[in-house]
Length: 109
Length: 497
Image 1 (cartoon, helix red, strand yellow):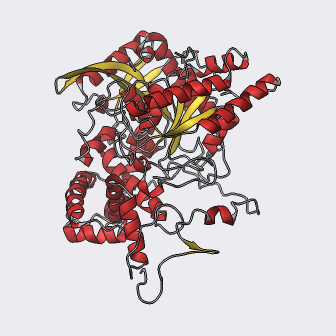
Image 2 (tube, chains in turn blue, purple):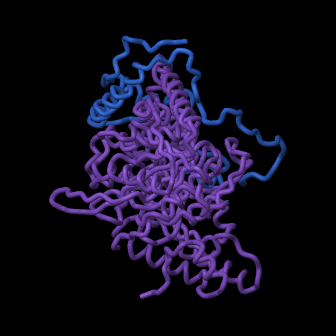
Image 3 (cartoon, rainbow over the protein chains, first blue to last red):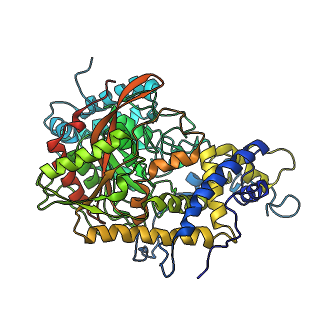
């Protein structure tokens, strides 16, 4: 069992906001990043009250369902036609969806 | 002026339509007209569907004319929240990123309404991706409270609630992840039910937080609430979390619960309640005592930790669920400059497409799940979730049929008064989020009114009371609400709109 790192400050630095924004694939303007820094810090400070609870031996609860999910039968059935899904693509080069170059220069990683 | 009341109770409308005293087409027309007439005032709808609604209505009328059987909602106009997929029109979640998105299929709960003969009048406004407690976080502008247009209707099912409260339709569907049906129902003086997790299929509901989301009905009467639940619930192979258990919502609806015992949490008599909310709770307790109920004090010691746990778990799930909106396969794609890469496509599309509250929650969720913070935040919150569930279980073990508490600590607040402080908005959900975390059913019913004055403007606003039951205890909650409705008149009052 892990314990919360006591040296983790609830408040976020502007660098931390930038890092989390990048992980979330968001690019806030400097002005917005500053606003998020204040708002997220106050929310995280509020959330910090959970650390006062004694949670030793408490089983985490990820879902209200104690049973596992119901799995569907593994048999072929009707699906949405490809054309319907392709019609939603914002940019395409049939039969492909067009995206910026992924590998090499300008890769997305 | 039309003499047809589109907001008339479901059973009345169904009876009149099947007896051919009024046609389904006339009902549809009346609802569409009222929706249109109030649109500028309330902004309850994203889109109305006059063509499809009239077509659905004519199909019902044709069946009746041929003497064929019709469903439980034959000729009844309904509205659905715009986060439920419908195979025609847009499904926007009131977000720029889905502003022109057209769902290729219909959500199970919505299809069940159509199959039961209901007429889908339109899609209703909401807080973007169901994140909010006021209806103000919508890319199509805020929804307004029919009782006082300077105030919010609550959220996130703001339009679905306002449409029912204003008598445009007798019933609508909302979704409830942390109180998004029950809190606005309280603020608009109507009934709202969040069913037990799994009772209503989530197939076709745009996911916000999958372990918390449930679709449920909003209505002006208990009978209509039960009728709607009966139609929309049921196992669905398309939702792996769909329950196989059954609830008989309509059973003995008007038979009082024998030996009724209600638990009132010590923590619900909070100093955070406004005087009107506190008075409504005490008056509600007295009404139930007069009905012969036993009232016991119970303890929900972790209720205050619910908000903190919720604002870890819900954003964590949201950050994962909303990762699919990346501008690649569907939804909004940003214009890229020369040489801009795939990363820029993701970041620009998402930053332009999501509103501030959604971006805040995505970042919060990403942070609490990120390396080094996962145990401190997410795992801790899951353990607190267990404690909250245990608190409710302990209360029911004491013999309570249900727990009685407010649906929110205050009545409707004025537009703009909480938008700059997200945390203040989150505290609005103190009485509702625990019910989602534990997966239990919760029902809001009209419980009183509070006189308030803001900026020299006086208003009398509805106050909601909430009943929380054990898993699959919907029938008992509905029967308790029916007992309360027989002794009170709050649910009969209508806004002057």
